[in-house]
Image 1 (cartoon, rainbow, N blue to C red):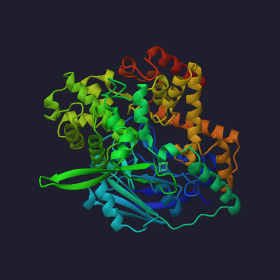
Image 2: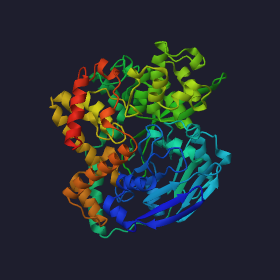
Image 3: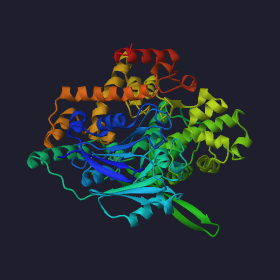
Image 4: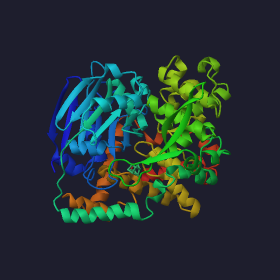
Length: 578
Ligand code: SF4
């Protein structure tokens, strides 16, 4: 298999392909290749919203070949945190990249006018997007579907008005209901005047030993569909966690003022499934179908006329736009998810920003003068809808500040104690205990998915665990996810891709690795990412933990600053950082 990188320069309107065999051999693919390309392409202290900042997409050796190896990683400098930007999306993108023959794409420069990139096998065109600039993300997808070739093997990724306005947590919508949500890739697209990227291809894939390939494929497929390792994702989906975390006192509510939501049952996964679930979808190459789509009936005139919107939901949006905003009806949550989808906003950051603003208004740090009379109050779905639209339009300084993230807004207006960000990234929906807090602080992209600290906390609730063991688990997970994210598999399939299955599946595509090789690779990838973070100013000894984490009881009881400090100290020591 030839392993190639496609380079596109928007400023020069040029593209070319380079064979980078050695890069893929040393760094596998996906996130390993992504961080190395970022180091090559992004000089220290580059403005993330300038022409000099690159966007890198990469896939791994298993994408398009094995089941549930469905993701693509985007690597960039984050305009939200000012350091490493890394985001994953499913849909059809990894398959389209594979069929077009590019394991990585590097986008440089800045277009002179609104543009989109069209890639069809080896042909790359930069096309005028003036007529679709300003159009919402969903409609943009519909328009490009009609304009561009490659039906079936095509992926369309695009931004909405939030990306165009460079909202620091704007995302990129991928195909249908999938996203590069976190850390502001949409704003980087917007800064390049890049509305969309459409990719399709017709290449075929050869495997060296078809018999062995079939054997390993069947083993993985059967594990995914005939055992219980992925059952939860197909059935209720991740939203099943709403009830569980609510019961455990780990469900952030009203900006983490509470850790259980009295109306939790109304927005539980079970409630969505019974009353709103319309269908389930899958990313291309996945037999699971975890993408849950709800039907939301909306009146659009006073004469009893309705439209049915299809809105995807899972745990994180229900937390961020539901319990954390005190929204206790499923329809309200779906309405807010739909607004974020159209605008192209990351739902998690958007929800946390609004919950901070609601509390800041309650406490008098801001007034109706700042909100422009928009009533920000718990459960106030219509007010939140208007606020989301305002933070994209930025009609005044306050909404402009909200568009830069909760850290920025709280530094300007006060209220840092309850500005719920870790490492500059708005937090995920887990108040489970110290491992969740520390996990997001030390994680390379400050995400719950870096090392699953929330899962470590829940294990410790069931069976008490020494602090040192919790830290060991975080480190082990940090490293092993580096390997899995180089492949690039869906993290829901971690139970399918055991070490043995990873080694066997790599062997079928001609890559021979031992367990030790994989361990070493994971550690190396983590270290390269930290090098980039430190180069851009990240300092683990100087991170902020919002006081609210220590004031609200978590699933593990009250967390103390001493515990978090002790864990951070141990983490630094075990990483050899003094
Ligand atoms: S489990 Fe869900 S997110 Fe993962 S690949 Fe399958 S459909 Fe996509």
